[in-house]
Image (cartoon, rainbow, N blue to C red):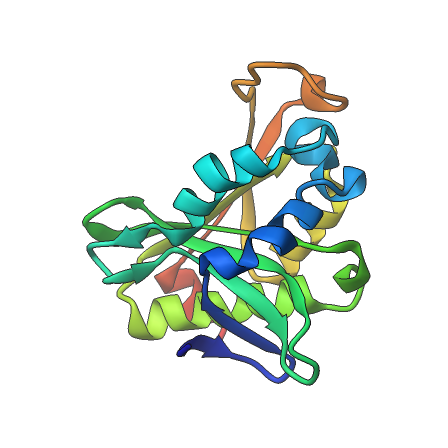
Length: 186
């Protein structure tokens, strides 16, 4: 399986259905899912019918996925996944950055390392003009990773939560980084 991107400590590669059990474990960790769905368990059927199709989706503008499995380079251990997906099917102008990593990977700099590498690849190889990221306003860890990755706060907004979860009453936040801003910091 070809690697999409490598860093000093990470390998990002295309998802396959072989990752189903890993995704099931990741999405059934209460703390991992706390700011996504309030920590509710995810069924295998949901992984197979909703999560995997999204992670396996190829974007015509890149002829590749917008989400990649993240493995620790030294051990091959699956840490979770990164998202760098175009907001429009046929345009690389604006992409959304995101990630979901297992708890063992938290606090070790993997999220920042992977995010920075994707941003660099996006601006140098993939014709990206703007990177955006959203999270819950109360998700201070993700907000810090986003800021360390070079994105700047844009706004608070009220998310469309079909079912309220703890912290959703504080809304969401949006961050962004443009190619011009990124080039000025290099």
